[in-house]
Length: 322
Ligand SMILES: NC(=O)c1ccc[n+]([C@@H]2O[C@H](COP(=O)([O-])OP(=O)(O)OC[C@H]3O[C@@H](n4cnc5c(N)ncnc54)[C@H](O)[C@@H]3O)[C@@H](O)[C@H]2O)c1
Image (cartoon, rainbow, N blue to C red; front, side, top):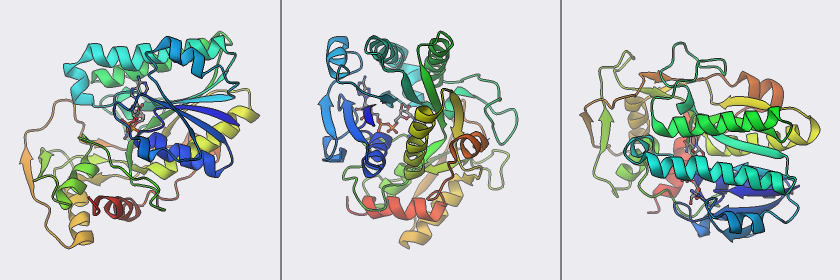
């Protein structure tokens, strides 16, 4: 199939591209390189340097008979989104509206959209499933929920077929070392621990140790990025075989606390990780874990790489070189 991937130079997009190229699909990456890296785009993919905010460029780039669009281009730092709502609404909402409207103009009906656990807000039960209430507590999550709603409306009007993925915490790197550059200024725990491990960062800040968890630190559900990539391949098959739509979590259902992860990295690299416990961040739930039953049942997907030791090994393999 001929596939257009926005944000394909980013962390998840570069892994998705590799997965789809390996499966024999034709891939065009559309990315403005605001956060992604050209070096991480597989050489078998075609690359177009462009923004979803550039309507003219988008129209021209999407005119080439694509079968399906995977939309990953967005800003994703929850804390920053609370400081810079106009930038987040413009990039994440306006960029998506542009993209979807241009898809329609060109008669492209199939869309896979990357949403987030942040659409749920505080969990009222665990593991979180897709019927859980949607009450985002940060602006980033709100932007994703707006786009989810828009996509569902367009589908109701017969204009789109979609798979919406709500990713939990993406982690890990390609086992074959095909990704060259790591994320800049990461806001997520695992890359921050890795930067502390390779001494490009002084220490990890642990946001609170008085949560209602075994060791008092927050517990999260980590999913290997190659398992997310595999889910995209399954979603392409789903959309091409069934005239149907799907919303599903992508998670493992298992959680690890901040201190557990730090301890595991210390064991892996045989060095102490320096950390400070600091104030809790507003809006951080104690535990976030999710069920992915819908993805298992409807897509025939299951995670293969998401054991925490595999995730951490694959990350250290790349971070130790920096
Ligand atoms: N990483 C996670 O744990 C996680 C969790 C939930 C959801 N997501 C979502 O998955 C998607 C990909 O995340 P990621 O971790 O790969 O982030 P990333 O920042 O590594 O990748 C995003 C890519 O999009 C590009 N981009 C941003 N705005 C653009 C625009 N307007 N036009 C064209 N390109 C643009 C950036 O240059 C970058 O290459 C995002 O939509 C994010 O919200 C990620």
